[in-house]
Amino acid sequence: EKEAEEKRKEEERLAEKKRREEERLAEEKRKEEERIAEEKRKEEERLKEEKRLAALAKLEEMKAALQTAISEKDIEKLKKSIADVEENNLVEDLADLHEQATALLERLQKIEKVKKNIQELKRPLIAELKSMANPPVDVHRSMTAAFLLMGEDLKYLKEWNNIVILLNKTGRDSVKRRVQELKVQDVTEEMASSAGEQILGLTSDEVYEANQAASLFFDWAEMICFERKHAN
Image (cartoon, rainbow, N blue to C red; front, side, top):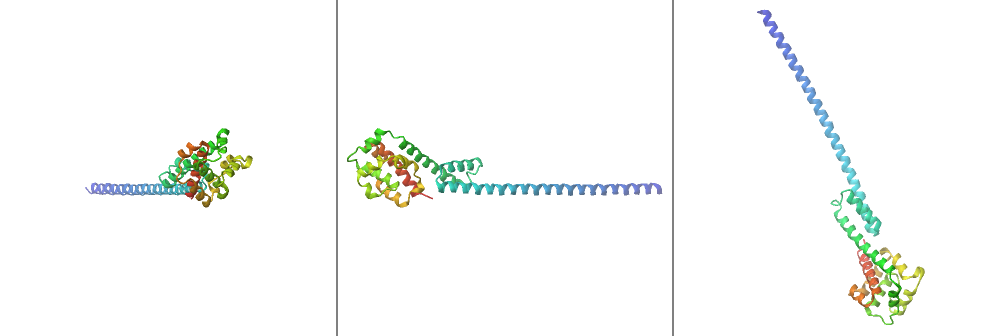
């Protein structure tokens, strides 16, 4: 009976030892799992922060590129910066600038289209314009506005014959070349204001009815005045 009691106690002692060992191992396992989970959490946070900082840097980079393109009114830079913003899914983050840049690009492309139409003006149309001895007021005002933007003096342009002289110039001084090379940034506020006053109240259709060539110069002048007025 004594031996049985000692055996029972030994079994209880061993069982208790085993239980404690299992508890110790379970606790170690739990702590290890917690450590691994914590390390994983910290790594995920680190990667998330790196991603956030990279996105923030990218956002600032895209923002600066848009602002530069808008300020310089550069078509190629506008195209690239707009495409970069869209490809990096930053349209919502830069909504106002993206909208502004997109609208500006569309307007500048319209200016380029009008400039191209002026370059492609046929000689008979230019000849018709130059042959006018006493042109309609709409035509004179439209051509005056265009040449004011090219830097000519208002007093000089009041005489139609002087405008014809300018239209007859060739080479570097040809009207087509001057239109092609002129940029919005080249136009001062004073020039734009003076030109704007000349075409105030006119419409492209009205000028077109008077003379087709003059209507293209009207369209070009109107667009340049608008962009200069809204220069950033």
